[in-house]
Figure (tube, each protein chain N blue to C red):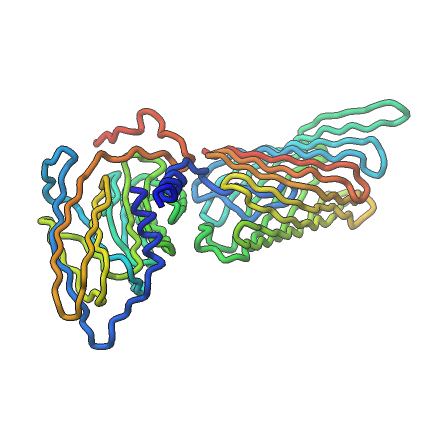
Length: 225
Length: 246
């Protein structure tokens, strides 16, 4: 997954590509096919598709990654560079959300139901978020230097509107992606560009707690009531 | 290009320390505070030797839990132990005692998140401690601390005041200090600091020391220390602190 951080970091330095007033830009449509490492197709995988190579200002919206049922919901989002993400705790017990990703390190401390904390993301890249108390909780925030990012529908179909004309790269990402998935696209104003992408999904990566240690034995298993 | 990518990848995958360090200084109070509901056990050991040209020595032990109440406010519940040694007519007298206990609060006037905090961060510390030996004596401590972050370099000024209040007599002293700390790796910092205690009455002593400091963090453990070399009415004043987070 770290390769994405490098790619995104470099892309963050990309040019500012603004559409002229009244120019609707181009449209990039396509499908993302997700398979397991053994080739079996994965139905309904959560996939984020995003463009790289140009920058756009962020919106005012605040994305949400909630903590619910000892899971992050959703566990994969994309935001525009410098946008904020809210982390509400909807569980009746404590969570300690943190990230040690080089693009954004933070420790929200422990907080309980009804409380929420926010963080801004001033660097493009892939930010892995975990809970220091519950090792089974993992989420990924993709920070993109432009607003051309979306979630594919359950069939893998996606549409990116208003893409500035030019030669860009379109990326697709699902949690547990094992290698880069991207395609070069040539976008023209008022035209539609079609692209097909496929992702091979691997096993969930093991992670360490916020102190860089393995989680204690016995905390790995989620025991539902 | 492949080599560069491999180095970048390796750097990204290297284990990292959890934080840059709870305190960068030995004698000075920093502006870092615990995250909400974080708990840490801290220990401080400080020496003061050779005040006013004597061979007197003092060693203090500060020990206690520190609790993050919010992301900007932390509370500490310290106990202080004191060992003293003095020599009169070639006779050495030494004592070791439980000296004080109390509570202290530290409030940081900025986000605790390094990415969102401004370069200039103020912090206020207030402590109240009961003297175990002189039963009616209350020690009140206050510090106004300002740190300025310039990337790898951190500069800090700490203006402290201590007042011992008792029915029989009182004592007040100022504790102005300042220092710099430079990050040399993700877990290691080095720098220098100056610290002084200036009595405002005849009951106390005044002294000042200057020296190098070092701070090191690894996972849930951190250490910082300074070796104060006396420049006014003291020979040496080393101090070390360490903490372990839970």
